[in-house]
Image 1 (cartoon, rainbow, N blue to C red):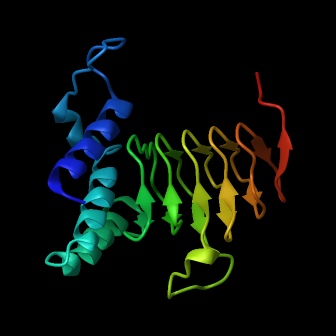
Image 2 (cartoon, rainbow, N blue to C red):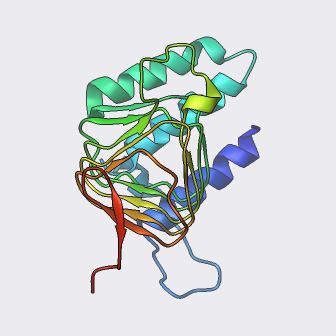
Image 3 (cartoon, rainbow, N blue to C red):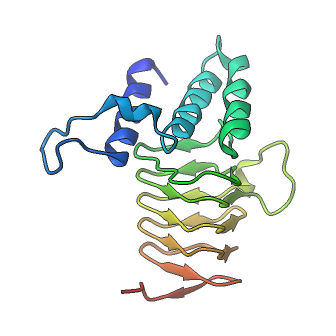
Length: 182
């Protein structure tokens, strides 16, 4: 990842958080929103990933990860590739060890995305892959080498252990697909 790619991801994240001119074909971003407690954790996620991918800055990656844990209660592996538009409305108790997360993901507090068992080596086959426009409600758990389709909604306190279809609404322990609430 180069600096222009990092900037593009951060711009997409900020646009998702707040657009100064809604409906504009080229939205203007209020860069002061970078100070928001809903954005700073995303900033640390991005910096950690940027450092992780850099041969010269790799040793700084854990610093951003641990600062995020200490200040915001969110542990997000820098090994996870995340598309633009990441939103972390509330972060406390969030653990993300997924392999990949698509664009415009919304991850509420207490969410865990990771392996079913302790996997310190970060084996890709044991990690979830998440599509675009997916929402994870507070306390949701998605575990194992499964895929979550585009547009899926994982309800609060839901446990997902199997693949999730696109546009599915998952609820319960264990998770079952239901119609979207009105």
